Image (cartoon, helix red, strand yellow):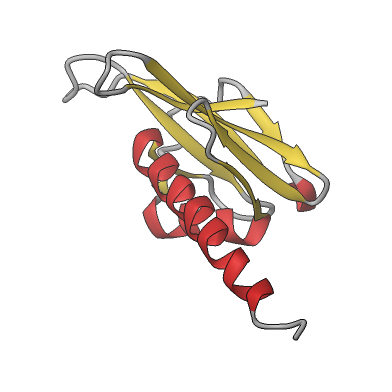
Length: 131
């Protein structure tokens, strides 16, 4: 299980979002009860959309989630010279390609949105058949 992001909610409580491998899918689950599965392809599209190539000088350290197909998702804490404190990034390691990095909060928000969107669409698909 990989911690993707943690945040403080309006009521002051902390909420965390995790990813774990579930068969050939990635399960995204949040402390608030949001949970669902995404394909590796969906995660690849999100990371390709938001990620930028990681500078070669930045060491690939941190917790990592091994995914089907030789992909890896890594949480990396990095303190850039322009930041007051370090930030959490998610790094997408793809076979035969340079790693991509994006701010963890942004990627996690996109993944949570996809999970919520898929959950909304699932009941509609099953309502149409069976009469």
